[in-house]
Image 1 (cartoon, one colour):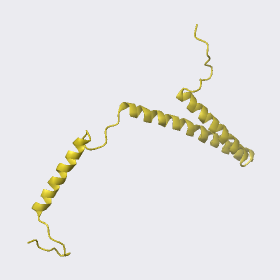
Image 2 (cartoon, rainbow, N blue to C red; image 1 turned 180 degrees about the vertical axis):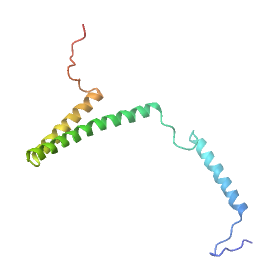
Image 3 (tube, one colour; image 1 turned 90 degrees about the vertical axis):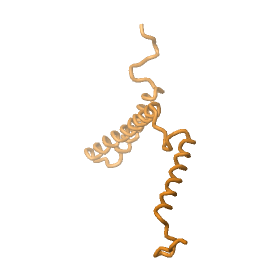
Image 4 (tube, one colour; image 1 turned 135 degrees about the vertical axis):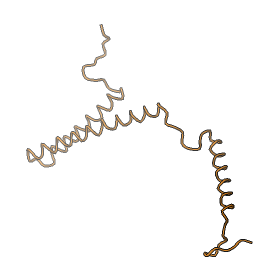
Length: 120
């Protein structure tokens, strides 16, 4: 008969605990092999890494345009005393520049000086 512990529940022996841990370990390893891996997430492939790098570059191009535009507008506002006007205008210009840079990097827009004529 199982003894009761001080909290009123049955006291479990070390053998019982290690047996349950062994059964749990076997079940987890069996579950991992059914999914076709070691049980964890699959490693990141080079294609995924290239996609992450491209997404990071595109987002940083856009954010840089907006931040630089906002910074220039803020500086002009401080210098000229036109409190919100220059910042609003330059944030909008920075937004447009960021979108244009993202389109260029993505290959949807041409770079300056690039034309449709084939090289001679």
